[in-house]
Length: 230
Image 1: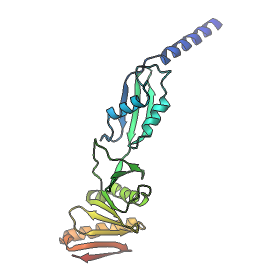
Image 2: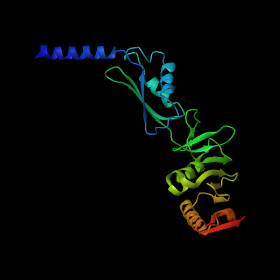
Image 3: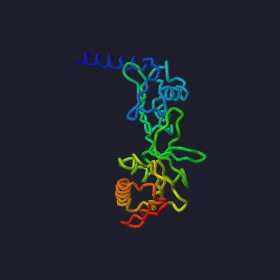
Image 4: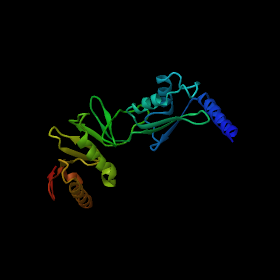
């Protein structure tokens, strides 16, 4: 029995050593979720290889997976990455990209992602999301994130809102597709009520064919919608 146990331990140790010395292949990249690639398979492979020169054609015992994973997670387009080596020696990187929900247009344009963070533009793909103009600080995206999330999750807003304007006093205005008027949201208190008022106004004005009769639609007065005619 002792001899058999010793043999099992020896074979396990031998197998582990052989597995550790298995040569790792070129990176195999899998994207999770969004299929629109802001960062490509080639970009990820280059990051892995450039930041750790022995990422390919080296043994698993040499490969530092933590370094490779950290390299990908530090990329501002990546939400999270998981890097591991399969039993067969394949280096696999599973990558989830950030999801942009608004695009800030300024001297240094960028996206606001679904978590309210900064995301750079991509040369590979441009997401169709509302543009953001006005007074926007990359370090303070709380209000932009809140209104952009509301737009992203509401079918009416997602269809019609094309621009978010943040004013100097941090109030919010919206511009709608094919409409000349400005929607004045103000602060984001009672946002649901304001949006419901906007929908009611839009439906009535569409029915009456009066959408183009207004310069402003002001939602800052509780249950009232105060409009200024063109």
